[in-house]
Length: 150
Image (cartoon, rainbow, N blue to C red):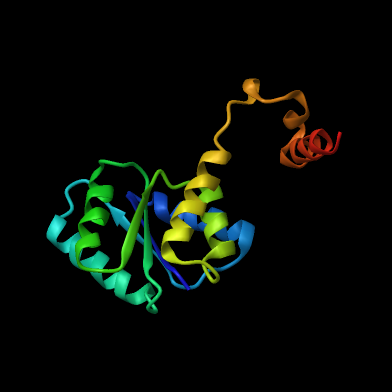
C-alpha cells in the first residue's frame, strides 16, 4: 500500500484528512505534518523523515502539499532525494478520496497520476457547467451517460 503524508500550512492537512475519512472511512498509513510560521525547517525535516518511515511499507510514499512553491511543498520536494517518494501539490478532497480507493492496487507513480486527474476533474465553476450538472454529480454523470448512449 502506498503511504501518504499531508504536508500543509497549519492544520489544513488534518482537516482534509477528516473530510476524506468522512467519505471513505478511517485510513491506515496516513500522517499529517502541520507547517507553521516560525517553525525550524531542520526540525520539520526530521519530523517529515520520521513520518515517511512510519507510513512506508516498501511501496513508496506520496507527499501531498497544499501549494506548489510553498514552504511545505519545498520541504516535501527535499525528501525526494533520499526516499522513494513523490510529491503532489494542490491537494484537495477528491484527490484524497481517489487515493483511498486505489493505493492498495497501484504503483506510486500511478497513484500520483490518477490522484492528480481526480483533483483536476472536480474543480468547477458552477455557471460553466451544463444545466443537468447543477443537480449534483450524480445527475451530471447520468447526463454524460445519456449523451454517450444517444
